[in-house]
Amino acid sequence: MEILVTGGCGYIGSHTAVSLLEAGYDVIIVDNLCNSKMDVIDSIKKITGKDVKFYKGNVCDYALINKIFSHHKIAAVLHFAGLKAVGESVSKPLLYYRNNIDSTLNLLEVMTKYNCKNIVFSSSATVYGSPQTLPIKEDAPLTTTNPYGSTKLYIEGILKDVYTADNDWNITILRYFNPLGAHKSGLIGENPNGIPNNLMPYIIKVATGELPILNIFGNDYDTPDGTGVRDYIHITDLANGHIKALEEVLKGSGLKYYNLGTGKGYSVLELVKTFEQVNNVKVPYQIVDRRPGDIAACYADPSSVYQCLGWKAELNLEDMCRDAYNYVIKTK
Ligand code: NAD
Ligand code: WQD
Image (cartoon, rainbow, N blue to C red; front, side, top):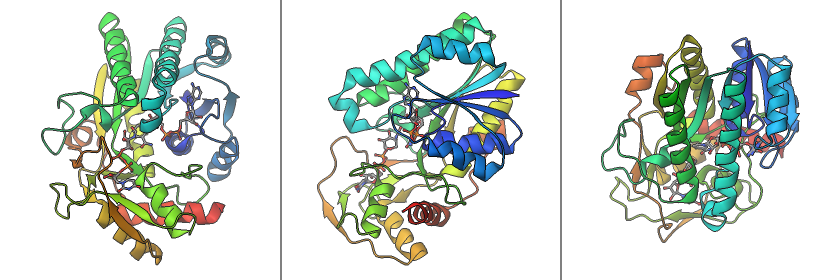
């Protein structure tokens, strides 16, 4: 059965492509490589021993998406393609709205034309804004504080409207918490260029000596040690969550929303200490001012996804720290 993975060369898409191939699906990837490299395709093949079809191009390109659907009998789409840097979205909002929303509209139009009405969409815990109650359930109030988050919320709205207009659609919206780690092979993972925005890539660059010191953004939050608390989830668990979501979509699930998180929050200091212990390295840090827009704590109530899909995270913070570092060391 052929599954189209948009953004399949990226961090989450590549790990999910591996899980899909291991589960016996045929995978077609479309990616314009604006935030990834084509080597990933070879790594996916090497890990799984299976072939992957790859189209290099933009999901906003109607002719390309139409061509893919005309050449393949696509049963469902996993839609990862999108720009995701919060800070960049503030300085380049039009780029974010154009890329993330246009690509989704285009995809949905072509899917409608080919009567493929099964989609799993990559949303984010960012749609919960600054949560009023913890842990966060799927029916918590939604709001966003930056253009990136707004693209996710608007796309969720578009998908809901599409479903309302035509109940033949099966649409699952997955709201990811903070994905970390890498495939255990060390062949795929996350290693952004330049100075990272996110915590784990920054920790790794300090551990490898590429950056001198980690700046911890505030230790005066209302959390056990004062540093920010997040629900970190291993990328392999996250990828496997997509297989469960896909299975349900293919059975005919209607419109569903699930949190993909572990349900447990860890502070910045806990993550740094675990990383140091597991990898036997030092990560020097200093406390600096809070980062504008950051929230104190954010973690999921994952009980709905467990009840409905039987999915829960299996890997722990040690696994995330070990695998994230292993990937970077191995590919250095
Ligand atoms: P990523 O940047 O590693 O992967 C996204 C991929 O999409 C990249 O390979 C990029 O080249 C491609 N892409 C972007 N726009 C495209 C377009 N118009 N046409 C074709 N390809 C395009 O990001 P990721 O971390 O793998 O995230 C995947 C999805 O999950 C994104 O939609 C992101 O917003 C969402 N998400 C990510 C996180 C996170 O922390 N990583 C958290 C919540 C949600
Ligand atoms: C985690 C914690 C920081 C860097 C972001 C997006 C969100 C989602 C996931 C896509 C916070 C602290 C960080 C550093 C630090 N992406 N920190 N020093 O902000 O929870 O979420 O990625 O949807 O939309 O906003 O993740 O990794 O940036 O930060 O102290 O150099 O680490 O303050 O408490 P965040 P993060």
